[in-house]
Length: 291
Image (spheres, helix red, strand yellow):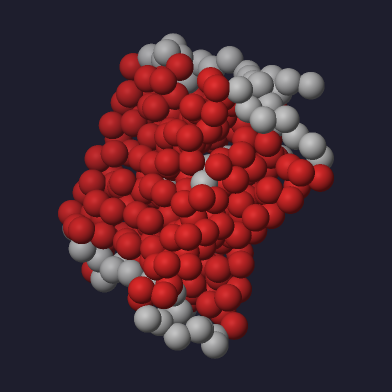
């Protein structure tokens, strides 16, 4: 349930990013969302008097921040300037397999040949989709490469962050991630916005998109997501992420009026099936949260 709530929140991220990009530069959106989350998190950490992470935990927090604060937002923001939210959603749907692969490499988790077959199938499907330009959608290989880099960044963030939930609650993890990033995100947000010379956006949808990204996509969504991974284990919890791509396709049509081709829907469903096979083939120990 917790993992699904996290996925539901994250599934709005791409359409909300498209809305925010109407009025802001992608770098401003990337840094701004983390700055919003960091300010809120800092207040909560002070209110609840949460102790500072130790040196080993801080190292993992910095790695998580590299993926969650810098990598994913910047790469996906640049990509969404060049392609549609629905096109990006199909490529992002391979993220559970990529995350699982990083978990195997990072934590030496045991797996079998079925796992690697599933990873291979989903990867081939996504590569074929990108090379065919998504069945006619307005995309290019540069945008697809940016999305791939965003997926890798997010996978690193998930794996490193999930590892920390064995030592601290999930909301502590994401709170420290965005708080330690504040010395970068606040000056960068202000400086980049001033350098862009863009006027203050007047469209409410732009501010709604930015507010959602900062409060939900960058912060509250991780409360549920890391909680789900800690309680259910990475394997079972990650299976919920199979729904994210399909949910994003629905929101992209509903919120942005994007058109879906039959190729897009077919590839999205095929990736979900292959990723499901990948997740079920893994053997992962449940990570219990520290009381």
